[in-house]
Amino acid sequence: MMLLPQFDKPVHDAQRTFRIVLSALAEPLAPLALPVLPPAPQGLLPGTAAVLLTLLDQEVSLFSANLPADTNDWLRFHTGVRLADTVADGDFVLVRDGETVPQLASLKAGEAAYPDRSATVIIETARFGTDQVEGCGPGFAAPRRFGASALSAAFWADWWINHARFPLGVDLLLVSADAVAGLPRTTQVTEI
Amino acid sequence: MTSITIPQRQHWMRILALTPPERLAEALAPALSAHPGHHWLRRPETGLVMLRGRAGGTGAQFNLGEASVTRASVSLAGQIGHAWVRGSNARHAELAALADALLQCPAHHADLMAGVIAPLEAELVERRATVSRAAAASKVEFFTMVRGE
Image (cartoon, rainbow over all chains, first blue to last red):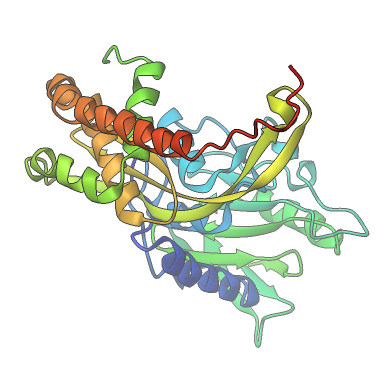
């Protein structure tokens, strides 16, 4: 087993990445370039590695199906994250490129008193586009067009169900090799 | 894989952690200059650990107090070295982690055990004996008091 290092400057690099992730959720469906890319372990895109190192710590759990053992070790060594047994237990759910996005209703959606106790889904995508949906809602000065190669028409139909449960529901981060886009539960989409 | 057991590794990690950093740097200098290629998996970081004791050695557990601890992890020559040392001396943790990695290499294990760890252990025993003697010499016997025997 050979562990890879994490960010070169763990504190500052994670802060810079966190700022970008915040901006991505404040301006949904606008991909933003990630400022620092750590060496990616097997089975993860560099962008995903950056987002995971930034968001995970020993107080949260992550669910990911079939993550390579070395990558599990890398995540646990650098972040201290717990690995969830089922998709319904994960505070964070990682969907790698090529995997099917789980039904959003099957994930932690929070409680009426604590809607923040919901899952955040991190979905890897090969590329972003402008060909699938038009989004509007909080954070949109004007409707924005968006697409991601990892998302299908069935996903966008599922997204409506998630949006309708507001204030409950899950939030999404879409990550490519070097960029991140946010899709919070407040965003309304129409297919084009 | 190598046939290093956990107690063996605990043994040398203990000696590395208890040796003063200046002495450790001096003892490891020849071995480390021969192996410049390493990368840090976890640069030294200092935190607190809670020390717990038992009343009378066997009673209920209680929190004795917090101690600062510095840890580091390094990848060197295909091995991963870890170190946790008391105090906030980052260089001490780095040296101990580098030494832990080298000690796991079959090619260097025997040399380092004989050339570095054994002398450091002897010094550790000697320091402990000196302190014990100094403490014993200052012991006061109160012969006038009833001691219960």
